[in-house]
Length: 173
Length: 362
Ligand SMILES: [Zn+2]
Ligand SMILES: [Zn+2]
Image (cartoon, rainbow over all chains, first blue to last red; front, side):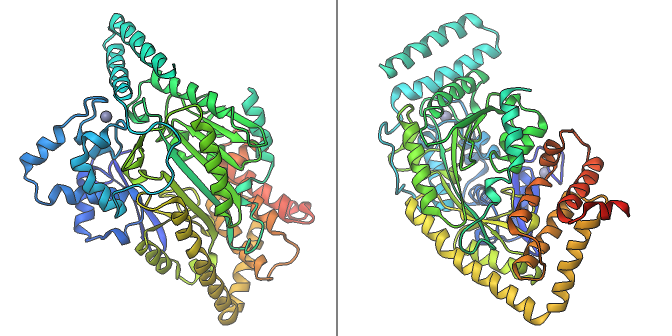
């Protein structure tokens, strides 16, 4: 889907309530930021989570960060799934569970803004806790294998597959 | 036609659990649902997976899901294999999301044949478990979804963070990964233009309002879902309580608006409801949107005693059976938009007239 105002892909889907009827807006990052900052919205009057998220991001971008700092933060990569912070910012979706750890400096204020809290209360799984080293390694190997397949390097893909199976086997055992 | 497709045809004939709405206040409260978002600890989130990863996730969760013991049988559907109409049909029934219907690659849904719960695999998160209950019963929905979550956890390890809780692809769901929602029918608040005020006050206490088909969907037929916006820093009970506490307040507003309409503009209201009923019984071609709009007026009319001889369950059934994919499944034909409008009008005449031929002769 394209942005309503330009040809870029729409990555923010905002629901506005006007006259009691929800109206959908499909905007690219740039226009979403413009829309949210110019219309002077506050979180309470924006109708959806996506909009809240977009707004928090827009604020983060403008508050106290130089373009240089921002560019540097944007380029930071998750060593396991390979997503950059910029990719997260434009899609609104993280790449793997480890991103909450490796992008925590950028994410923590965002999460606090969205939820007004920073610590989980409630149900916990019966088993397993934090991401173990083996798990994050599996995520990295899966990415490497995806890349190997894309590059048609099937020999490497085969080796990676065996390595993945080996670690999976260890976990089950 | 595959096994799954045949089973889906059976589902189509029933009215759909989400609109059966029985119990107290059933004229306003339609259903309660709770969904949990869960991810496996050793895979990337769905958006970053390879097709091979997705197939493996699907296989792992399929195995686990079929071991759920909840006293009824599960229909496991490979969403990628379905026709466009069947996917749309599942969306109309609230068994999968629009996103899940439109995505690509290995993904599935396991449906309880009584339509009391469904599990989406490889949607935005690896797993989304949802439980639906008629009327206002969040406690019942929670007990069930919690139990299913525990059963699946016997087989898999969830991505979990000591401080942040259950980890999700979107930070808006992190923590409990829980969304509690209650679906309400609010025609009088719409008619009296009070609904926006209600929405604004809900947003102030971080509750979200969505239309019938989720985020961004038009509020078709005056159905609205009230749900929690926040998922972190509050326990499941607290999240449920927040929604449960506000629902009676909204019901009260809707009742006041209905009383106002009956008191202050009885004639206009009666006229509106009767005209809506008239159009639905005689139209020769009618869009889905207009149908929802008119059925909403008629539904309120029946609840206020302005229309005789029509039952709410029948009306609820018409809301779902006149949706585009339902209409096509029930008629057994793929129809384009113009033909659907003709078929919809025929369906409505058949179900709303005592002597259907009467209107056919015109
Ligand atoms: Zn744009
Ligand atoms: Zn990552």
